[in-house]
Each structure stands twice: as C-alpha cells, then as structure tokens.
Amino acid sequence: MPYYPPEPFRIKVVEPIKLVSPAERRIAIAEAGYNVFALKAKDIFIDLLTDSGTGAMSQHQWSALMEGDESYAGARSYFRLKEAVEDIFGFKYFLPTHQGRAAENILAAVLVKPGCHIPSNMHFDTTDANIRARGGRPVNLVIEEAFDPANLHPFKGNMDLKKLKAYIEETGSQNIPMGMITVTNNAGGGQPVSMENIRSVATLYHSYNIPFFIDAARYAENAYFIKLREPGYADKTPIEIAREMFSYADGFCMSAKKDAIVNIGGLLALNDPAVFQKVSNELILREGFVSYGGLAGRDLDAMAVGLYEGLDEDYLAYRLSQTAYLAGLLREQGIGLIEPPGGHAIYLDAGALLPHIPHGEFPGQALAVEMYLEGGIRACEIGSVMFAHPDPDTGEMVYPRLELVRLAIPRRVYTQSHLDYLAQSLGKIIQRASELRGLKFTYAPELLRHFTARFERL
Ligand SMILES: Cc1ncc(COP(=O)(O)O)c(C=O)c1O
Image (cartoon, rainbow, N blue to C red; front, side):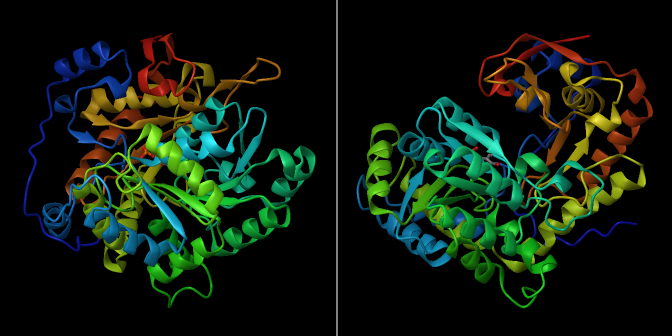
C-alpha cells in the first residue's frame, strides 16, 4: 500500500464542499461549453485545476495579514518582504507584482523585441504567451527523457545543453535577449531541474553574454528534489539549496501563488540596474508603485512569511510524499502517468489512456470532462488545447508531444481520503476508456485559448 505521510499541521478552519448530483454535473459542464475553466466552484467537489493561489495559509500568515501596512509608498510590509527576498534569493533589486504573469509581462516589455528568441527548458503557458505577445519566439529545449512518460530520470526538467548550445549558435546570441529555465518544469510534468544543470545552463548562457532568468514558481519543491536526489545535497537545508540555485542566475520571475503559499502575489528580481529602472517604469505604468506592485500591503506580509514556510523541510517532505502517494494509487490501477511523479501535481498520460482520440480531438480535454462527470473533480488539460499552435513559418498546426491532464494538488488543502476518492473515480473511468469521445472547438481565442475556449462533444 502506498505510504501517506501524516500532515505536519492540524485543521483549524474548514470550508464545506459538496458533490452535486450526476444530472446537475451534466448540465453544469454542458453550460460551461465543456471547458472546466467555465465551471462554477460551487459545482465542484475536488478542485485540482491548479495549485496556484489555492493553498491554505497558516495561522502565521493570517496574523501577518493584520500587520499589513497600506501606505502607498515605502510601507513596512514592503521592507519585511524585501528582507525575506534578499535573504532567500540574494538579488540586488526586486519588485512585487500581483502574480507571476505580471512579472513576465514587465520583463518581456523591456527585453523581448519582435523576432527575438527566448530559450528555456519549457516555458509555461503565460511565459510562452507573454513572449509571443511581444513578437518573440519561445523555444523549449528540455532533455529528450522528458517526453518519455515511463523514463525514471531523476531530473527530467533539465535543459538539453547540446540542443541549447546548437540553438544559440544557429540563432546568434545577439537575437537572444535572455535565456530562461523553469523550476520545476510545470508544462513537462512538474519535473525538477538539477543543480548541476542550472549551473551548466548559466555558464553556457553567460559564455554568450545572455542574461539568465529563472521562472521560479516552484523553487522550493525543486530545492527539495535536489536534496533528495542529487549527490552532495542530502545534508543541506532547502534554503541553502535555493540560495545556491539563484546564485547562478541574473534574475527571476515568480508566481508566489505556488511555493510562497499565498492566494495572490508575484516577484521579479534581478541584478542589472538599467533593466531594473525600465521594469520599474513598466510596473508603475501597469501594476502600481514599486513598493506594492498591484498588491495590498497585507499581501506582501503574507508572502514574506509564506516564502519561508514553503521552504520548511517537514512541510516539503509531506508535500512531495502526498503526490507520491497519489501516484502509487494510480499505478496500482495501471493508470499511465508521467514518472516519476512531480512535486505539485500528477500528470495523467491522456494520450496513452485514450489512444483512439487524435491530438486534434483533444484526448486530455475529453478525460478532464469525464473526471468532472464521474466524480465532480476538476483537472486541467495540458496538451493540444493549451499548446497546439500554427507554425509561424508554414502555418501548419504543431501539436505538443504529450497529451496530459494535470491533477494539481493545492498546498495543505486536501487529505488522504480526498486522494483515495479521486483514485477510485479515475479507476471507474479507465474501465470505460474506449467509449470516450473527443471534442471540437466552437470558439477559441488566438492566445491562451484553454482559459476561454468552448467545445462540442464529438
Ligand atoms: C511555471 C509557471 N510560471 C508562471 C506561471 C504564471 O503565474 P501566475 O498564474 O501567478 O500569473 C505559472 C502559473 O501556473 C507557472 O506554473
């Protein structure tokens, strides 16, 4: 039997949830245009759409909210956050933003020019879209093992250094205003990046004078994977590992809604004073003054506390074991998933589970819809709905190599019995997998289409 770790907390406040009837679920999903983003939260029993902003804050974070200083400029809350950011990440300058994509937006506004290229292991959807929206080309150069769901490589989020070098040579470093890496690799299964890879990627970018930015949404989970899996790190604390990770970079953007366990917030930090001045001006134009970045003072305080809680070793041990437990339950039923399990989520291999549904009929979306119908569970497609796009040169549709459904686990929210229920529901679906049919778009916007697209069942 898979091991479930006792939670290193107890429950003080509860939020009721309800499983609405199968008939109500059928109506709700049809009204939502078979897009789970359009479902109402009241109609959902277990919500695994995202781990972003859905975590439960601690009593320390709630009490920090009461300390919030709502001064427009120079608030105490800003300085408390500044102290935490400097302590953990060590960059010269930082800006709070209202979430990760706001940090990406202001960075892209300053660095991305039409026709330029931005390599990464794998860009997440908002980073990808922010680069495209400025006329740049996001490029994904993760190692080949990332595309083999059964491969047990311990760091499947690693960048392929040979591919990266060849890409820089081919494109010309003058056309690459920054290089990135995402830790952990959300779009590729929540897989971690090793310290050795981060170091080598930094060295390579720097040998071409390309600034190196980390997309740090899940930096604490990545640090703990390094502790567990990379030789030489077993005796280091997550914060020490995080400090080393960031010491190789020129900056980072981050959604604090993940590992800082807050419901809203983001960060941008960097060392270059000229770039800092420009991003500050962008922030003031679009988000707010530099000492609050579109957030309330109390949000900054909750983030300052959450940054440390996300790095707590007992919490991280529980967090990664919880995901591993769910993976174990699914494995026992022969349900294909990306192995080894990631930190924040399980990624079901919908392409393998529904081989009769082609890319263009969205197997991941079909599975996500069925999970709602079966158990009131909301999950997120990470496949062709999210990532297929026309090639800018040929106009031909380029499909992602994997059709996934992500079961993102909110932090400190669901218990063992919720995960057991989820595994049982999936087991029932798998028994009738061959009867499932795909979907087609009835509406799709050009960018980030998964959020607002509507579908018809085939
Ligand atoms: C790796 C990664 N980068 C960036 C973002 C964007 O962050 P936000 O949703 O706070 O805008 C996300 C959100 O899911 C993410 O997972």
